[in-house]
Image (cartoon, rainbow, N blue to C red):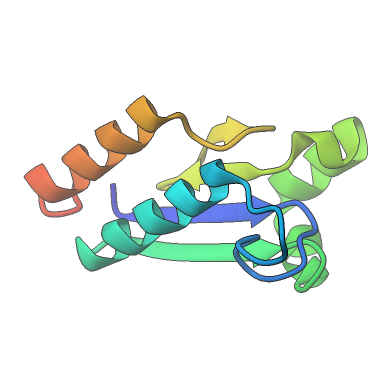
Length: 108
């Protein structure tokens, strides 16, 4: 894996790790993104509430929003291809991504 792009639903901050009720899945995902970046993966994260133009500029994301609305979010691209939509990765998927990035120097 060389790149990971995340198109998040509207959240109060760039990571969703704010406020009084923090979703543990978002905490785990933010940690995984930091670890992937440290392993050499180029990570980009876009929040619909803060960077809406990025959603318009990406044809795939724009089409998904037009077809499915915000229920399609988050959309996660791995090396340019849609990896997940409508949910964040499970713990097992995160472990696989981290393993691939560290085992192959971010080229898996």
